Length: 222
Length: 222
DNA sequence: TCCTATATTTTGAGTTGTCAAAATGAAACT
DNA sequence: AGTTTCATTTTGACAACTCAAAATATAGGA
Ligand SMILES: [Mn+2]
Ligand SMILES: [Mn+2]
Ligand SMILES: [Mn+2]
Ligand SMILES: [Mn+2]
Image (cartoon, chains in turn cyan, yellow, red, green):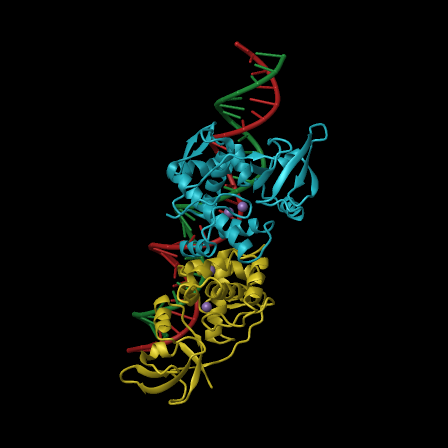
C-alpha cells in the first residue's frame, strides 16, 4: 500500500520535528498534533496505526519516533517538496515566499518520473530556495549544523545559508532586504534589552531585526 | 466548500460523456460508474449528493446531466488537466503518451496562481498536446465537430487536428509514425472487409491502421 | 506523600467514499 | 399480458480520517 497524503504529512512532520529536537528524542504527541493541525486524540489514533504498519515506534505517554522505513519515506516526501519548490522558483519564476503552499499539495502527487525530470532540469540541486537540503532519491540527506545570526561572532563576515521558517510574510520581508541564501552579512551589534540584532549586508545595507528572526537565519563563517 | 478530487473526477467524467453523447442526452449511471471506475451503486449515491448540492440534475432510472454550475466546475478541471499536459510536454519535454496519468492527479492540486503561470509561460495555448481544446478561465470552450480518418473523403489532403484517445501505447504508436496534430494526411483506401484504412502522411510514409483507430484521429480538410 | 496542572488517551460519534449483494424498476420478447 | 433480462437503486457494511469531551496518566510543587 502506498501511503496516503495524510500519512505522508504525518511522517514529514515527524521527520522535521526529530531534526530540530535532536535524533534520539521522542516527539511528543501534542507537538505532532499541532504540526499536522489535528486534535490530539486524532494524532494518537493515527500514530497507533502507523506503529502497527511499522513506520514509527510509539511509546504511549512519551512520544513517537520514525522507524528506519518511516524515515526513508519521510525523506522522499521532503525530497519531492523541496525539488518542487526549487522548480517553482527556478523554472516557473515564482517567489520563494509563495511556493511553500503549492509544494505542500504537489509533494503528494508528483510521480517519480516527473520528480526526476525536475531534478534533471534543475541540474540536481542540493538545496531548495530556502537553503533546505534536498534528500537524494535513496532518502539520504546531508545535514549540517549551522550557526544563526543570533549565535555567530560579532563583526565577522558570514554567509547566509538557510532560512529556518516558511512564513510567507517573513520571506517577503527577507526578499525585500536581499537576505537570501548566498548573501554576505556581518552582525554589528546585539542588544538583548531591545531584543534586537543589527546587521550589515554584503551590498552595504543596514537592517535591524528581532532576535527571534535572527535565530531563523542560518549562516556559515566565510 | 471546494470540491474534493473525487467530486471533480465525477464532474469531469460527466462533462466528457455529455460531449460525446450530445448535449441534451442524459448520461446513464452505468456509463458514469464505468468512467469513474466505481460500482454502480456508488455512482448513484454520489450523484444524489451532487444533485443535492446543485451540481447535477438527476433523473432516477434515466441518468444525470450537469447543471450550469456543474458544467463550469467541470470545464475548469478540464482546463487544469489540459494546461498541465501541455506544460509537461512543452516545458518539461515529456512524451505526449505519458502525460495523461500525471495530469489526472495534478489537475486536482494545482492552484489558480500556478495554473495561470503555466498558461502564461505557454503563451495561452488553445489546445493541449492531443489537440483537445483548453477551456478559458471562465469555463468557456470552443468545441468544433471534426471528421475522422474513417469518415473523410478519400484521396483528399487533410490535416490532423486531434486524437480522441488517451491510451499510452496507442499514442506511442502514433508518435512513432508521426501521426500528431498538424500532420498532413491523405486516406488512400478503406477496406471494410479487412477493417482497415490506408494512409499516406505528409512526409510520404504509408501506414495501414484499423477502422477503430482511424475513427480516433480527427481531421480537417486543408 | 498528596495534590494539582498539563499532556495524553479513550470513547462515542460524524463525514466521505467505497463495495457486494439483494431488491426493484424498466424494457423487451414471447 | 406475462415473463425474462438488464440496468439501477437500496441496504448494510466497512475503511480512513476526523472531532469533542470524558477519563486517565505523568510530573512537579506543596
Ligand atoms: Mn503536504
Ligand atoms: Mn523550502
Ligand atoms: Mn483526476
Ligand atoms: Mn489531453
